[in-house]
Image (tube, rainbow, N blue to C red; front, side, top):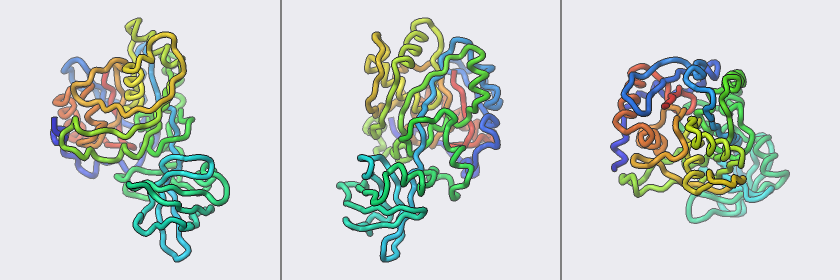
Length: 344
């Protein structure tokens, strides 16, 4: 397979720059995974009409870190620092831009408060920084900005602090939102629970690799960056029992899908169920078997991306491309703040 097989034309005006006024007001395309039944077009508020009592809905509870920092060196040179992960309470790994101007020992004053020292980089783009006053978490909460994706061509707005988080976000660690979850609000979750839907959680911390292209034209030659995952015993039990009893497991997003499919491949769904914590670089493209997930809620993704390839693996490449072309014709909004589809 070639990466170019997963291309489609996307007018720039369909790339959503703002979230819907209300989370559940985004549009929803409902598709059959197994048949060529026509798509249904509705809004996310009507999702409960397509979910059955006994279904297990799996959400990703990761929380987005305010990862973007702006800083200035004593000579006036300005830098953007993009937090990737903590080393300990005082040190963290980040990208610095312009990277060629950073030198070990440089001291940077962070806009909004805080001072950091650059200690050097590895062979790639990643460098180590140390917080001179306070902790990494304190620095990010005080001075960090929402890491909006590069295709959102505007500055951070006040609403982004809330709207670029899911309502079930609890565990800090992502530098991008698990965007399928952005369409849920508390009332919708209550409606689903009241209808007998079991809602359980996984954690997959989304890394910066989610925005990086696949560099090799040969699909199979590409590898995803490893990302931390954690799944509690109760979630594994609920998923395993649903599979055993013929009830559907519905993943909210590609991140939840990759976490669940990793669990299935590693035997975590087998008894005895225990809390699991590890990393995954699972790459699901056409030909992959889905061992845990029966239905998928997901946004509309970038062409040629690993996320779109997962959708193609789940429902077939030609069918996925056809529905994406229809979404373009019908004016669906794409990417992080865009609309959603349910494939069931």
